[in-house]
Length: 167
Image 1 (tube, helix red, strand yellow):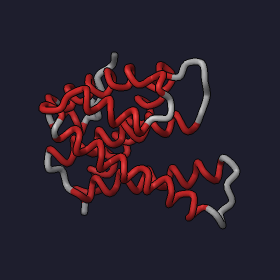
Image 2 (spheres, rainbow, N blue to C red):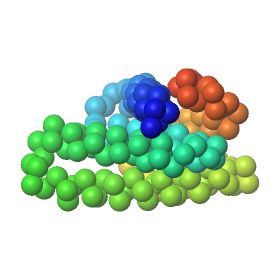
Image 3 (tube, rainbow, N blue to C red):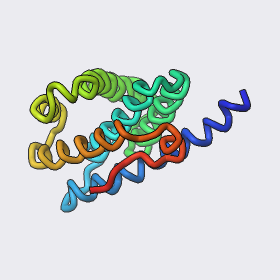
Image 4 (cartoon, rainbow, N blue to C red):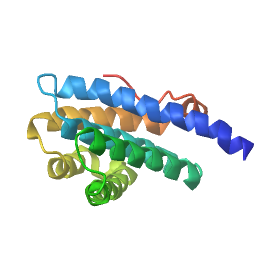
């Protein structure tokens, strides 16, 4: 249990790093707009990339689940903060979570086969999953860069939250 508590602190740092990086990426991609949906898309893609990395490095499933639980709690807080009632919270969160798991599956499969299918497949998946076609090429380059960075990332650096490669 003590090991999990130490890792839990590291996982919180990792989650916070995902949030920070998502803000930077969001501000770069959507510099002229402010939209919670677009931020959530960027954040989900960053979280999915990290979860994929953890799975490929055979990091404990409990740690992956912990990051997802934090994400769900944040979603709940966001819905309430944006004026959603607590009575309809479950219904709204269920839609977000279904969307997230669908993306998690699609992008994990894509990252598993990234070497074979490359940017073309990534473009197809992003075009289907992102609402704004204006940022598709930037997002493809961003994800490709970070995919390559994470692929080479040592697990020790991961636990130090050295997760993303800046553009």
